Every structure is written in C-alpha cells, then in structure tokens.
Amino acid sequence: MTAEPPPTSSGRAFDCALVTGGPRCGCVLDAPDLTDDAIAARATDKFIWLQRASPRGRAAARSGLDGLLGHVRSRGPSVLVSELLRIGIILRILGDDPADADETDSLLAEFGELAELDGDTRRIGELAVLRAQRTITFGHGENALTDAAIGLAILGELDGPGPGEDPDRWAPLYSRTLNELVRVLLKLGSHELADEMSQRAIAVAEAGGSTIERLIHQLNRVRLQQSWALRLERGGRDAAAATRFVGAARTAPAAAVLWGPAFGRAPGQGPPAAQECSVIGTAYALARPGPDHLDLLCGLQEMAHFLDDRIVLAIATARCLMTDGRASDAMAALAPLRAELTDDTSEAVLALALHREFAAMDGIASGKGGRSDALGRYAVALEGELWALREARLTALRSHSEHHRLAREHGAISAQALQDPLTGLPNRRALDMRMIEATTSTVGQPCAVALIDLDRFKDVNDALSHAAGDAVLREIAGCLRTTLRSQDLVARYGGDEFVVVMPSTSLPTARAALSRATEAVAALPPEIGAGVTMSIGVVRAPLDGQPSVALAAADAAMYRAKRAGGNTVVIGIVAEPAEFAARTAGNPSGRVMSTVTSSAVVPPE
Image 1: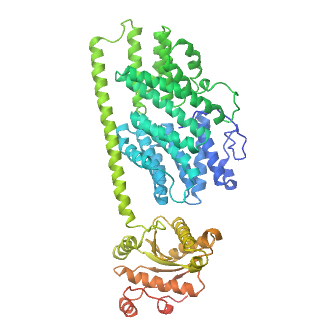
Image 2 (image 1 turned 180 degrees about the vertical axis):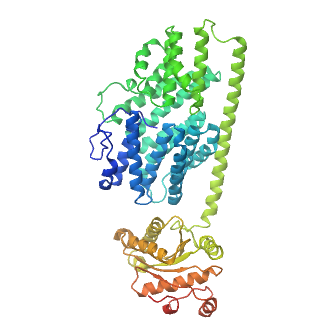
Image 3 (image 1 turned 120 degrees about the vertical axis):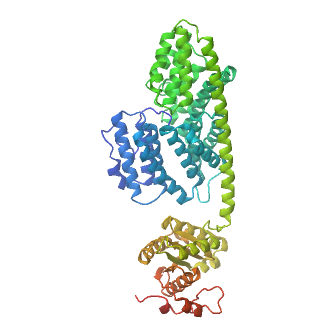
C-alpha cells in the first residue's frame, strides 16, 4: 500500500506523460529507449498515481503498466519482470474486482516461477504474502492463514541479503515486503504478530530506506494501533484500547514530519499533513474525540481511498459528532460504509468495529439509551466467542509458521548435502541422481547432457590466486544458471568442470543454448571472468543406458572442442555398450580421456 501521495509532477526525464498531466500513457512506445531503472521508476510512479486517479485514468495507467510488463517479458526473465508482475498483482488486488481473480492467479504463478528460478528467499516469502492478500480479497480470510504463516516464517527469519545481492538495494525491498505482510496480518486480526513485523520493518527502513518508504511504515504503524484499539474495544478491553489510540496519536507526528519531504516539498511548504492524510488526521481525533476535529475530518473525506482508512475515518467522524450531541449525524456518517460492507469481507475486523459503532449509536439516537439487556448480553457473549476465535487464529498462525520454519530448516540441511558450497550449484551427488532419472525415465526425452571445461582457468590460479579462481568459478556458475533455462540442471562436476542436463531438448537446440552460454561467459568483463572461456561437449543421453556412458561421450566431445581452440560447443555421440566397455578397461571411473580419438564419438561435420 502507498502513503496516499498528493498528485505531483517531478519533471524527471523518465516521467510517464499520463502522470505529469498528459491525456494518455506513452510508456509502451517509450520503453525501447528506457533503461531498466527508468522503466521501474515509471511503473512505480504510475502505480502510486492511479490510486488517486479517476476510473478512466486508472484504466489508462493499468493499460500502460501491462504494456511495460509485456515489453520487459519479451527480453526474458529478469528482476524487472518480477517487479512489474508484483505491481500488476497488487493493483488487481486493490481493484477488488472478482473478474480479476483468474488473471491475478496467473501473474502470481509467473512471479513464483521467477522467484524459484533465482532462488530469491525474500521474493519467495513475498509470493506467500501476495497469495494471502489475493485470498483475503477474492476469497475468505481463513483460507489465507497458511500463506500468511509461510510468509511470516520466511520473512521473519531473514537477517540480510543473500550472496551477490546489493545490501543497499535489498534493505528497502525487504522492508517493503514486511510492510505487505503487516497489512495481511492486520486484515487477519493478528495485531500482535503485525506489531512484531512492523517494528522490524521500521528498523530496516530507518537503516536504508528512502523518505517515502519510511513514511509508509510510520503510517502503517498508525493504522496498526488504530485497528488494534478498535479490536480491543470490541472485546471489552477499553483501557488497553485507549492506550493504543494514544500510541497512534504519538506515532502520527513521526509520519507528519516525513509527509512533505516524501513528496519533494520544502519545510513549511503546503498544508499540514493532517489536512491531506486521513491516517494522520484520524489518529489525533480518535485519541481525543471532540467537535474541534470535525472540519478537518470532513475535509479528509476525499483524501481516504483505501477501505480500511475510510472505515476508521467514518468511525472517528461519528465519535466526534457524538461528543457534539449529534447522534443522527453520527449514524449518517457511518451508514454509507455500513451498506457497502454488507457483501465485502476484505476488511472483516474493521467492518465489525463499524457495525458495533452503528448499533451503539442507533440505540442512543432512538432514545433507548443503548441496547436492551438481553441484546447486550448476547453481544457480550458473541464478542467473547469472536475473541476466542481470534486467539485460536493467532495460535494457528504461530503454529503454522513454526512448522514451516522447521520444515525449511530440515529442507535446507537436506539441500546442503546436494549443493556445492563454493558455487551454490547442485553437486556431484545431485547430478548422479538426475542422471539416473535422465537415462531411465521416458519423461523428458530426448535429454541432452553437456560437459563443460573452462579454458585457461589454471592460469587464473597460477597468475592471481586460488581465491581469485574461486571468484571466477562463482561468477561463471551464476552466468550459466542465468543464461540457461530453468528446467536445465547445471551442476558442478569437480574442479573447473560443470555438467548440464537438458530434458526435452534435441541436440541442435542444446547446442544453440550452450553456444549462447559460451558467448555470455566470453563476454564477461576481465575483472569478473579473467578471460576464461568454455569448451563444451554435448550428447544425447541414452535411454536405459548407464549415466557414465553419456558423461564419457560428452567428455570426449569436450576434448575435441579444446583441440579446436576452446570457446566452442561440439556435438558427440554415445558409444555402444561393448565399445564403451573396451575403451574404459583399466579406468575405474569410466571416464573417457583425451586419448580416445574424436572420430569415434563425433559425427562427421
């Protein structure tokens, strides 16, 4: 969720024409000339802008965002694709249109595939949070518990960026994801857990977030305190509720200080934040309701766009009207939302608070002084049951989260046994398991197997150091993982050798893909790749054959690539079982070394 920014025009070169006051969005036409950073900036600005735009403006902005996503998709998987997918998912969730549910699911699936492909733990946690948001909006909150628990387990355990991630870029992304988790927990009524995540998010944002990111976290902190207070009131815990209302009012000034600077205003420029932001204005009104807040609250009616903010604003307005003896006007302030919430379950916790408020004021306005004794007893019993259900939900969330954490911990230990510690790639043991599958299962046929040996890698170790050589291995491993397809297994075979298992891939297709990987490694800057290139041999794995036969044939083809000068890919063929046995006599490993003549294993060219 955003901080409800006022419409502004920053005048930057990469601004969207629609956002700066133009009649239409031209981002799709501009996209080929924009950098990734400029595309990301346009998408973010457009996403913020459309939340306050007219229906026509929102449609145009959404079309522009979808167009940008289509453009970056055409360039292949990337972090930028993931970011635009995230924005597309959230804007559909915010739209709360059931017709968007299926499309949201498709975007979530794509987002998840990219997160898994990159092995990005933060984005995997964010996927769980987005799924929970989707379920709350288009389904039922109870069904979101599992995804919320998974997000809580993953994001609550993160303590820093992964290998190769920029800490300065990671911190704001992590705090943003925590912010999304806080919103989900609030909708589920799990204020205690939301409080824990909110404090963590603020700490991360204060250490490395932008002004607007810090503002968003402070505003969500206010929202948390207000929602919690209203929930406590329903449970008859009035003293605790008053403390939370005061806490919201004390947090509001921290948000107000950030409001102007977040939108590029000089100190003292523009109206006070409380006149533009309903979250800040209602914090003061609910802490001490009175008629003196009414002009401010009425002026905020057009500023509140999110349903939760509108509910809290309506309750604050009604309470201030009640202190002025205007019970009928107080009910009128609540009535429109009361009708709107009849079929909307996306804000169940706050909706109950509003209905309770209306019922209490109805009794006063009717001259009955409140509810009948029987109805009052029923309401108390019902709220007691709801409180018990809330406690059960909180316990279930904690239990699910701990279960998932332990499962991930066990999975991580199991994964470590199959992972090369230097490169993070699957190791020889994992490769052996995959090769057995490739040579015994009809699924994924034809299956290509490639053996990669680095050219001039020994020179790096000799001329620089083994530490420099390790760094080159890590970079090349990352390049292979990024360049090849997600379905391809890239494993470290040992030393400076790698093996790629490519299911459902013909040899010409495999050679083309491996050639692209070869070009990518050769193009690495000298300070990263140290001038190292790759020699690759690739063969078709024989079905019902031994894995060692395929690896031996790929090895022989790789040596032919070496003799051709390296930095190339050579296709080989697998020897017949009898021929293979004769060649490997006296070689227990079954590996065919360079003494094997290439003509025996490589088809004529």
